[in-house]
Image 1 (cartoon, rainbow, N blue to C red):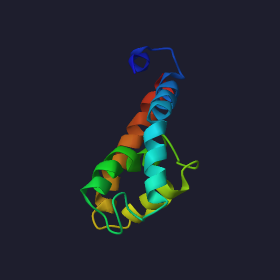
Image 2 (cartoon, rainbow, N blue to C red):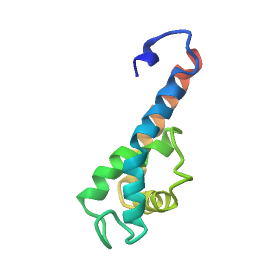
Image 3 (tube, rainbow, N blue to C red):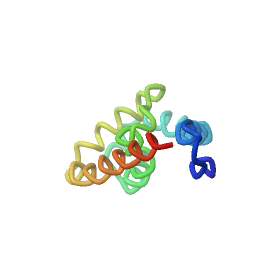
Image 4 (cartoon, rainbow, N blue to C red):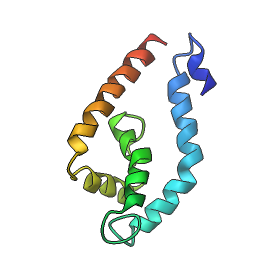
Length: 108
């Protein structure tokens, strides 16, 4: 992530995101497998595990950092989690943050 601080490197942000996704791929594979057997991370209804995982992974599509095309069960789970009350209110902040990231990336 130190590369993000270097000016004049237009691919630094994209490179950092790619590296992060590669590092977390084994975790995504485990979650994908769990979600192939149940609609939520630990069973048939959402738990704290879902909320904690969503905080880490669910915002990535909103931030245009990752789309989970290779993980269809995670993508479906994210869609289920986004239907819960409070999602729209929380998403406003994430969408605003995405705009900030985009503006900063365009200046690199």
